[in-house]
Length: 284
Image (cartoon, rainbow, N blue to C red; front, side, top):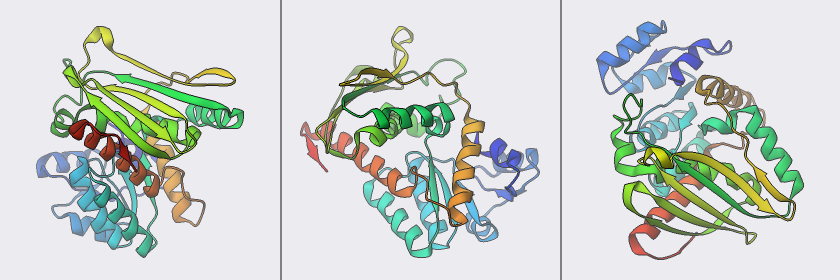
């Protein structure tokens, strides 16, 4: 839906090959975009300058680590791993081999959101943020309904990364996390940022139809700044992520959505999961 079409359409990308856990599906995708199917992931890694990964976080983490150690640049999906340890290992391996990385937080690559965040950062005086991301992957025809990791990990790990990536550029790093989970994957997360501001997240991928909503806003001395609605254009967004990776690999500035940022997001989600399990507030 995003990776292959965007790579094939990008004028500065040679879409070399495809590897997948299902060889038949990988071969069909490769044929559709005139790429080569690979039966061995290490052979694909050896043949390219960069890899783009669209796999469950635990599968992605192992492949990303192998590619980083081989000096290959990385375009990873969110979250980059399920554990802070695995995420940090990817960051360290990429740094050691001078491999660059970008994490695909879809709407953060849309110009409307970038412009909004720049304006909100310039305003300042914010005291809190609220993000409600409630949807369902279980509706008929939903393309993510067969995703085992999403069913097992729920909204915290699926839509939670997008929510965290939205508020951190404005409110800064997170120092404390408290979370609760209820029925129908209704997950509530409180983040205390280092400046004393608070973010409230409400997340679910199993929300009843009448509860489904995507709302986000910042609140502060200047009033309320609602995040503008943006169409879901994953191919366009992924193309911009590719632009960011190419720029970083060519010696330009690292993307603000680099591997280090991706690891921060994983650390916050880990803390939320721990808080749900233990009932404690977790200090990072």
